[in-house]
Image (cartoon, rainbow, N blue to C red):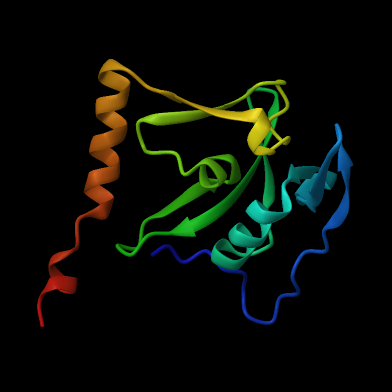
Length: 139
């Protein structure tokens, strides 16, 4: 289980409800003035499991919805909201059909598998994190 909930005493983010391309959605505030477009069912699950405060991370000229997470072994990483919505495996990437990485409606997202050496490296890194540490296995 990842430790990703909001800090104690921190107010949850205030989301706006609306319509986007004919679909009922929630506009989730991110840092730097950006908003992610998420379907209500997905947002309620993500906010409950991972918290409601997300940041806008800029990479290669695009803005992504991400959050810092701590793994059980103490390592820190960034979780992408699109990967959590699609339950993407380590050897998969999540792409958007319309090119807007903040449009996180399921109808706009699809998974694509990495192939070859890239997939092998991602699977290996994922399996190393999932293995329990020696201190956690001793009684």
